[in-house]
Length: 391
Image 1 (cartoon, rainbow, N blue to C red):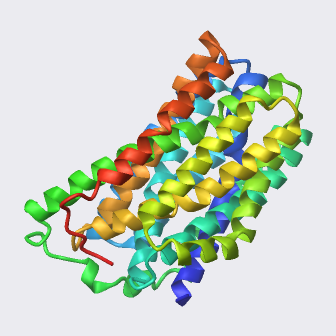
Image 2 (spheres, rainbow, N blue to C red):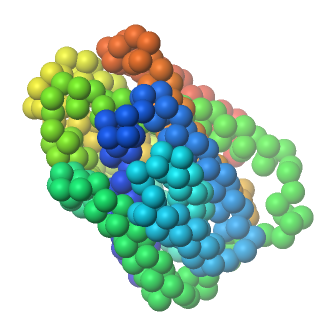
């Protein structure tokens, strides 16, 4: 891999490690510690993801028209300031919600730039460029989640301190190690405003992106239940907090250690579409296991299955979005697809929380399984009569 892919991967791992101290515990902290309902906790997370969507779109546009390096620094500075505020004021639910929203905005600016930059510095890498960032994300998840539950068992205050400290470390890494990043961007990914004007080809590509993204939205809506309603459910049935955090550590380490198997699979299944079909089927299987999970062992099995499914689906979607992007629109397309993932994470907690509060967790599982058949259709039809710009 090119040098800058390695640097982007290291930066990603640092950033996600900090975030992974916090996000698996958000719902548990607001519901079980601060005493709010699941629906309210879901509403706060919805606002967080709404801000992330705005940040994603801003970051994608700035990648195309401005400086990737300065964009990442700006987004990180916003997140760092909010994380510092959260460190001192996390016992007040109003302050908690406000700072969580600002963190969502700041980190939202960063991620489409990271993905777009990966595709730009390694244009011949295809799915491998996006997979590198994805694996780095999950290494950060593994490290952060494995430590987060343990640290929280002593005091939640330490979690907020660790999150702020690692965001600051990420800022320093970008400031020093990625300062020449703008020079590495593929010049063919730029275009003049005239070239970026909306023509028939661009419109058909964007329609295809919308269809592809609708299935991605459903997948993330379903996946987000593991971070919110299922998290609280594990507490309700007596599974300790540190064990729940270990589920996410398992998720991250499986993704990192399972890459040789994924590589072997993707070498045989050359179509990104077929990769998504297989991955989505496996994701559905994880919820079928979770329906009957009452002991921690079953949640481990369900998480392992979920992880295998996401290893195939999550890197494939940004790669397809990159293939659809016309010249000069790579950043916008990555920003859009990242914002759709954020929208799934936004809708998932509040809708899932309402269903569980009014009905029960098993009804939610059945609804999720039904919805997860939609991505099969959207993946099948999204690129009909569409010209692919980048290979």
